Amino acid sequence: MGLLSRIFPKKELTIEPIDLSFLRNDIHSHLIPGIDDGSPEMETTIMLLKKFIDLGYKKVITTPHIMSDYYKNTPEIILSGLDKVKAEIIKNNLSIEIEAAAEYNLEPEFEDLLEKNNLLTFGSEKYLLFELSFFDEPPRLNEIIWKMREKGVSPVLAHVERYVYWHRDYDKIEEMINRGVKLQLNIGSITGAYGPEVKKVADRLINDKVIDFIGSDCHHEQHLEMISHASRLPIFHSLVQQDQILNKSL
Image (cartoon, rainbow, N blue to C red; front, side):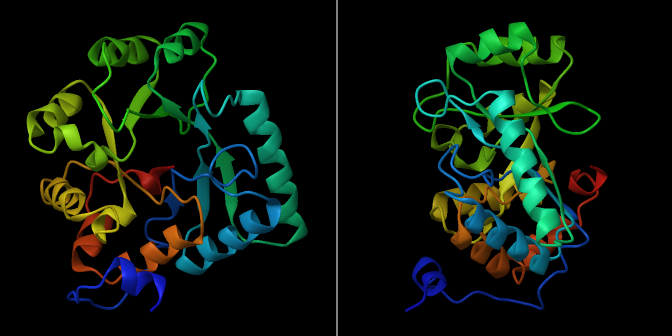
């Protein structure tokens, strides 16, 4: 039994795969080798980039974790790694662009980085990708969002559908929208790979047309297999073609 049949045992209605060149850009991945829980070495990074090309992507904006306890990355570490990946892309003659930002954990140390303006953002709007704890809503969330906007960055909440403490409190997600937070959804969530409750919330967010960015959250090859599966699902076709999706604007 293959990986996808283990993750997606239930038969679903599928249609012809959507051409992801329409989406153009991925904005959430972990492709710089050896600096977080994503690609472990350059060979894997190049293999993953080739698969992004096969799926139709033209650019990836890779976003290594920045977490004070686990992944003590800095802009210097990330951009140095990016330069090495760019050199390998040229060496391998790959037809894909790569940029880098970061996925910031909203922990107390993040406020220090925010005060110093020592942040990696993407796009002309200075989008900043951040994630929350998967266990509890962090304290001072609204205050930190206000500070981000005061500093001139546009906050983007990573994989909004995966915070289980909001699954029965949809008003919290609406509050994020009202506070000017852009919402990013993981493609794997549509497939059920993170469980039925996450899929249910993902489907609701898609039907409500409140997702701004679509991300692979690619750490390894299986995440790209999830995209191949999702590309045949009607709900993913609906999401990719919604007018508010910003991937193609980057």
